[in-house]
Length: 212
Image (cartoon, rainbow, N blue to C red):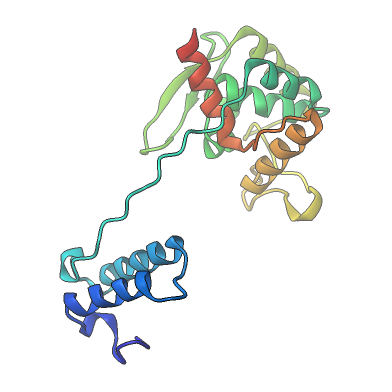
């Protein structure tokens, strides 16, 4: 808008391309990330105004392919041993042992656990699809012990106040920030040098299955 003195939807594709070319070639060029977000911003504007993406013929953005961080089985076991709270051990056990995403782990209800069939029903996971994942006997024993001690009623993991505001959620579920905080704290206590995030446990689960 500042460059041409008019809103982007009043420009023709050549003017937009000239501006994007200007961004990449000017002497003090911004980062490639800035260029990408400029394109994303224009896409969002077109969508908001009801224009097709072809209206400005925006360039495609190639996604960088980076290999995920994968923990060894020894590192996962070390995290399980280092977790001082049973809640955190069970959380790690589900994220790794069942390959759950953060939202899926937070959303586990007691009614989703079938100890007789040794299965966990993941309700409305990615793609709004339900699926069943197996539960190991060791994890089942830990779950039973945790449920009894935590006196869980509905959700398996209820939110608790944590440092720096990383506590519960509006519906009493363990918040996303709370889960992230717990995993980072346990990883730091273990001394794992890799950058461990919640999804790292899911990547590790998938990789270890392939290695069987």
